[in-house]
Image 1 (cartoon, rainbow, N blue to C red):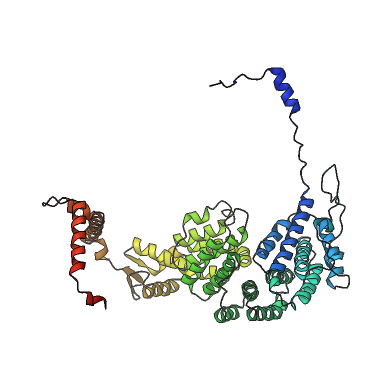
Image 2 (image 1 turned 120 degrees about the vertical axis):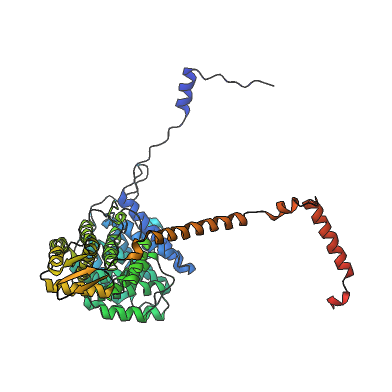
Length: 507
């Protein structure tokens, strides 16, 4: 066999080979505005293909791309789409052109050999006055751009024109885009503090979406209506709406998380704390878990869940307050939790007064005010465990109550509710705790521990029995018959049994 040539090339040969190797051209970084322009064109192509093929699942991805395009300043490219896809006599066209200016941005492809201006025609879309779906997509991007500029008056005009243009379209390919349109329409009016004006349009749109079996539109509009009612503290109307409607099964996780959050708020105000806490925990789990995505929603849901859990008589876990992206915003709620846990009414009143503006902003002030009795109940429980007999005046001093008469009434209510086990002597003016002999008896604790140990041993024995193998047990029988011999004998007996059977059984 010929030996392989393992000699390394000399210095001159390596240098020559390196010169002959073609150098790769360094790729120039693409301008974010040009990339956003191309992405918008790709989304427009996806919309056109979906309309032609009637496969509308790709439109959901197009709607999600709005958040990414929102962060890139490319008004020059967006203006090119407005000029290319909207008719001159369209009422929406002058509004978009007036607010989306053609900025001085070099919209070129970035190659030195053939510099090419980025136009709609170069992307293969030469259609003038294009599809309604593409028009809706471009109009939503323009509305978002105007909203980011804080130009609410122009945003309101654009939103009204969009609703007038697209709500009359009865096309299933528009469902995902119109749902997004309704969201920004309601958002504009909410920022203008005129959310009540949108209620009639939203109710009519929800009725239309239900008749057209538009699941995405139903989910979005139902959440917008609930948000509208809760914005004005109309909890009864919101409860009736939720009671008479059903949330669609085919919905996105984001819309379902919002729906659970709104239902949790309604249940909490209606004193249904267990169901409210369950809904809020589901909303937190359904929300996006990224450090920057959905942080505001998770913060609002976590704040409300903490207050509801305190109203249930439980103390939230410390890990709830140590989340890295939420810990700074949850410090006031941690302080109120500490006051409730210690039963310190003076500390609770101080924290409540200090952060009252925050409670109003978070719309948890009503629920925070209900925590006063929980603080008193926790303090009474501590007093009951510490003192076998204590006067009303001393209880009022320890709990921070105004008078011993108020302390007497609070103690009586706590006894009726089963918070403490005690009896009141109104003549002598004291409360005496009843000793729980069963709880303090060592024998009862020993018997409870014995029952638990017996249960664990029984569970272990049952598990061991379930793990035994019958074949290995049969192999150890005294007759010495192996598993193969037994299997052969059973086959012979089975064959003999078939021969002896009467053929009339098969007739």
